[in-house]
Image (cartoon, rainbow, N blue to C red; front, side, top):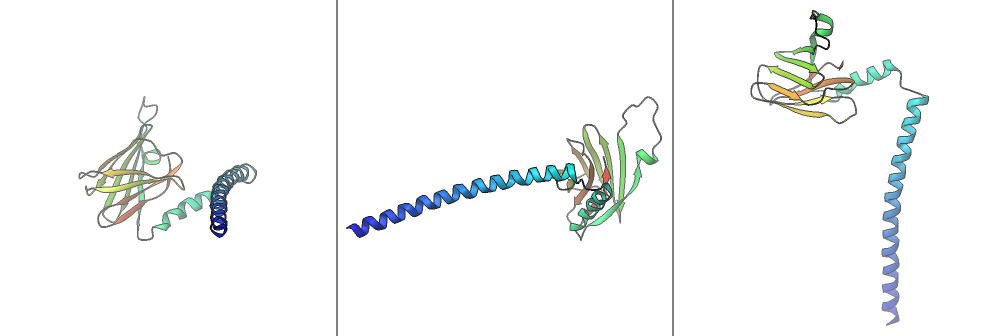
Length: 172
C-alpha cells in the first residue's frame, strides 16, 4: 500500500513542478518581451537607423512578393498638379501604372479613395512597413475606400484573380 502512496506523491510533485514550469515560462516570455521593447526604444534613441538605410529597407520590403509586378508612379499631384486657389489642404492624387493595370488613388485626411482600371474586384493591402496592413476590397467597378490615411511610407498590394501588382512606395 505504501508503494501506491509513494507513486501518488511522486505524481503530485511532478504535476506541481510542471505547473510551476508553465508559469515560469509564461513569466519569462513576458519579461523577454518587455526587455526587447526597452532595448528597441534605447536603440532608437541612442543609435537611430539612418534615413537612407530605412528608405532602402522599405523599398526592399516589397520584394518579398517576387511574383508581383511593380506599378510605377506616373502622376503625383504634389509634383505634377496645378495648385487650386483657395484650397488649403487639397487631396493628393496619385496614378500608378503597370502593364495594362492602372490604379488611381486619392489620399485625404479621411483616408483613401481609389479605382482600378480595368475595373474589377481585387483584394488590396495598404503596406506600411512592419506594421499591420490595412485590408481593403475593390468592388466589381474597381472602386475601393479606406477609413484611415496611411501614416509614413506606404504602398498598395493589389491581388486580382490572375495577378499581384505592388505600387511604388511613397510618403503619405
